Length: 124
Image 1 (cartoon, one colour):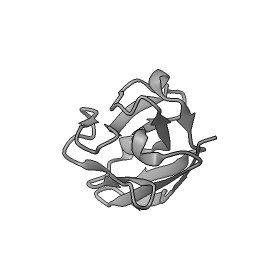
Image 2 (cartoon, rainbow, N blue to C red; image 1 turned 60 degrees about the vertical axis):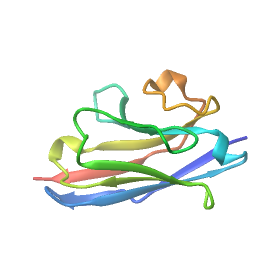
Image 3 (cartoon, rainbow, N blue to C red; image 1 turned 90 degrees about the vertical axis):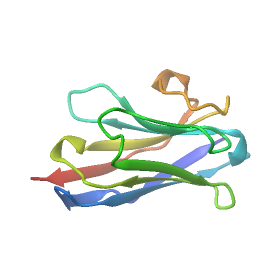
């Protein structure tokens, strides 16, 4: 069974940076597509950034493109989300997800496994 554990969330001021990490265990990480999603109170879970099995394909939501970078390290079974120039509207619980198809899917419905989430709060 795949397990995902996120870390790196916290409280940061507007304009600051955070790096989220997600460790994958239980299966062969290099086969999986990975994604970061977020959910703010009262809102649906939304796509943030995704990466395919090889790392050769990435997609970003319009709201984070140019500020966030997703990456993966297959040797460490890790996926990262570097977040720069943070804004108060980036405040949410951020979730790591994995899909066995290995694709850079943008819909949460296409993901098979989820982490428990990590809170990111950006103060104004």
